[in-house]
Image 1: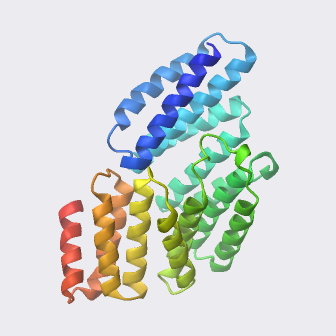
Image 2: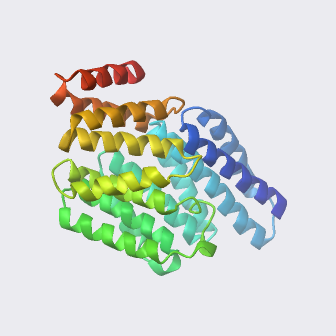
Amino acid sequence: MGVDEVAAIRTTAAAFASWDALYGGGVIRQAVHVQLQHYVSLLGARAVPEVRSELFSAVGYFSHVAGFMAFDAYAHDDARRMFQLALSCAEEADDWHLRAKVLYCLALQATWCGDPDAGLTFTEFSLVRADRVTATERAMLHTARSRALAKLGRVQEAAAAVGVADEEFARRVLRDERPWTAYYNSAHHDGQIGLALWDLAVAGRFTSQARDRLVGALDAMPAGHARAKSIGMTKLASLVMATGDPAEAAVLGRQALDWSGPIRSRRAADDLGDLRGFAQAHGDRKDVAELSHRIGTVIG
């Protein structure tokens, strides 16, 4: 194995990550899985120590991409195995940056699957040596921590974690970014903070802050991140439907549906289902009833 082969693995991983961000993980996941098996078979190839370390890091990156696709498609057992493989590769390569990213994803998955306590554990584990990762990586980890704390109902701790995440993001240095964090700009950060505050906001806490973050993220989200934009708009519509003007929420919900057209993401579909649930309280309104019917035609 040489540097060219390692570079090819990284390039392939980045290409699949871009596809995932645009269309979701459900379209080409099986092809990615087959490719991952091939790359894992290369880990025993002969290479000088420096290249061997880079090989493990590259395969770990690819496994992380495959794991997130599986997570997005709700193949959760596959996702956990791929994330754990990515974590093992990161540790073998002594790649603390990849380790942080994988633990961040494990935290998100655990919290999404209804185990925020495990999500919190993953973030705490990842921050044991916070000095070894970049400010962007620390910001991401603290947003995941805030989401877990919000799910656990620990309101003040969740808000404090948001503050720490903002402080870390303000310290980021672009030249320090790794391939798996280069995408994480201010729009993505605001989006993650908005999602972290969302559980508190629908219960009447930090409502304006959550809305402002989600709106800011949507306004600045770069091209190529259609899934993030669709999920953000759906969450904003649900927040407004639960706490604000149902007419405005119906408009936002229609926009979310327009954006979700080509995306194949179980997470995005579930968020639309949540929006339909919040709409039930306003089912006597024609615009809201039409939105609920349209959601039903999309997600069943």
